[in-house]
Length: 120
Image (cartoon, rainbow, N blue to C red):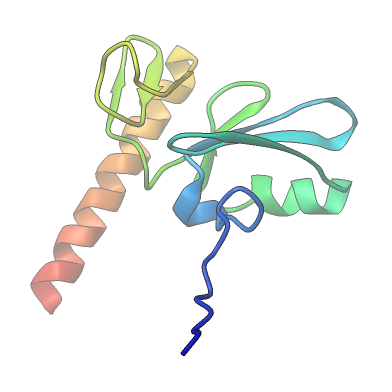
């Protein structure tokens, strides 16, 4: 018996909030999405870019870069880290002002998650 397994190709059909750590918006609608072991460039319309940049899951860390607040492991020294610190780590640079605001957002998110877990 042959059974075809449906598998999702994360390079083509990624889920923004689940698979992407951060993305950069470039010129002419070119958006570079960065996942754990890959990055993908896609051309997007102005409406699509406005939709993903207004998503509350993503926070603008500098002029062209948005980070997934659910994937952040650490914020330190002007960098947002998504994996273990070291030579292989993924990170995005962040301005000092936005670093302070992002830390506040993450603290609020942790408190909400903790109160949600207690309510269960």
